[in-house]
Image (tube, rainbow, N blue to C red; front, top):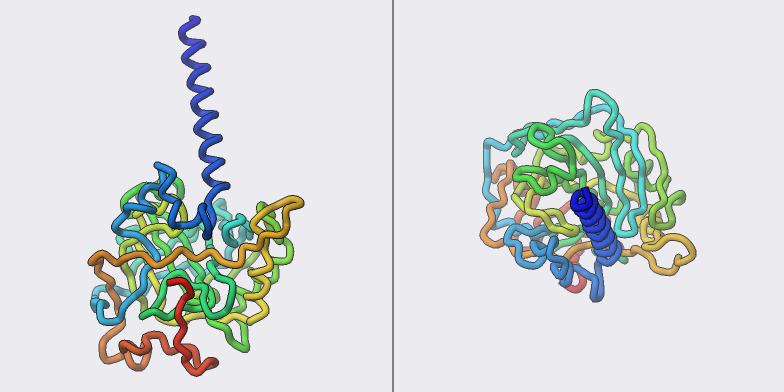
Length: 321
């Protein structure tokens, strides 16, 4: 009886310690300094951030694209989403309400299973010149929206999928500045004023996913990782070949968000972009036909993504890369 009690006590103590350790690490990591991406691998559970060979994001080089005629259009649900928009201290995340039926499942394209949309993240930096995590031939965009989905056929939830083969699919949307904003992005941006500090959330009803997506069926895809700790290499990435447009003031509102909560309001998020990782001979497939490259997605050594007519296609390099 005494032995059972001691065993139970030690189990509880261990779980409490493990939980405390997890909390410490989750509060420790950032995007710069001694807690930045270069040091994420110090946590043994995040070692892939340091030694992984299939890491994300990457710089997509046009000459390395492999045309795959089997890549069909991706099928997204057309209904509107409800959920909480949260300032996580690291980014802005829209957590999709998962109780409604039918679920928000994505199929086809490079996906061999059905993937259920779980959350949407926005990545950005300190200026409009840089901000996307992925690059196209060295070019950056002001921001990148990432729609994250987990394998609903093989996994019960996002946490399980995070560490499972073929567990996740992430759909990356480049963001460009324009005179007319995207209606769905505007809904998200209008709620930023309610979440200035870490941990604050704002409920959103009726987010139109089909409006948030760019008007294209063409994309690039490769196998990679999550871009935040622990950098799990379980992701099928899909990067659309056209951006969505947002207003300049909406980007400004993103940079006003704080990393901390409570009275510590002086440290702004400003940027949440992981540096580019080596490709390591991975294949990047695309359904963009060669004869359409000039029309849809100019692929040359000088410029690949010519969608920025507002800036006369100024070549942009992410700082510090």
